[in-house]
Length: 291
Image 1 (tube, rainbow, N blue to C red):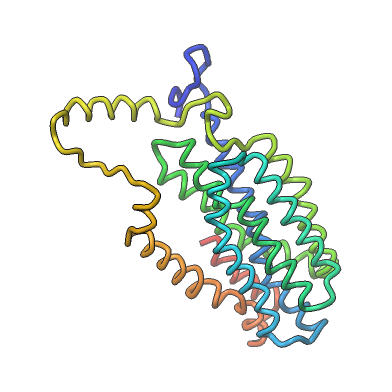
Image 2 (spheres, helix red, strand yellow; image 1 turned 180 degrees about the vertical axis):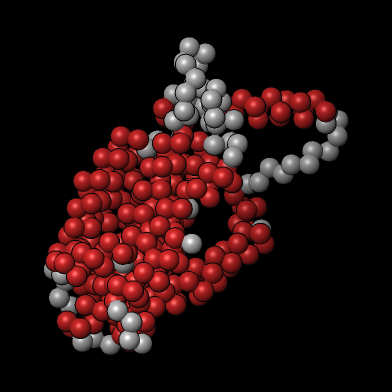
């Protein structure tokens, strides 16, 4: 960890700044996606207050996932071509405004617009579509480890729902939406502004392990001069035509879409209908995320 990715010879070895990006990302994932996953505990109070059908209420979550799925690549493209340090606070602002707006929602279409359409815009601009490439920019070595650590935030965002449920029991669901919005504005917003940088060059640094990889690349070039290169230089059009990409997309759709959210959206309410307490039902949901 020490001495790798230093910006200059004059700097003293220390903890690589990229690890701050990792921990910022974990907290960001918890707060950004915790609001989406909190749908499972807002489901019951909304159902009991408005008496809409469960199917109509669950469309809120379906819209959220659907819109997010189409906007995620757009957010990634914008991060590459524009300033991610502008996009992410913008995402927090949109997500916070949509979350706060839910506190005053009184019609079904209000929730569809706020939770189903505006929230995923904020999720995409402030979440994993920008954090994932940022982590890859900061770490040439240990990318697998770093990406795995970063995804801890995604798992813990399910456990975040325990706090949301506690707040609902204490102050009601409408005020809880305002508290969640406030946490985005007063915790995550300054954290992003202070610590997040999309590329190490933006901070005057080099990626973790970049020097070692450059040296290894030179040795590999010397060893393979005159031979057919084994690495493939992918272009965007080649990537979009590759079966590997679309099989990966399909695997994500089957796991996250069918195997995960199709069940989790109704899991807590299902357990409550079976006679379990609301907090116990939420704890099972949280256990899934922790695991």
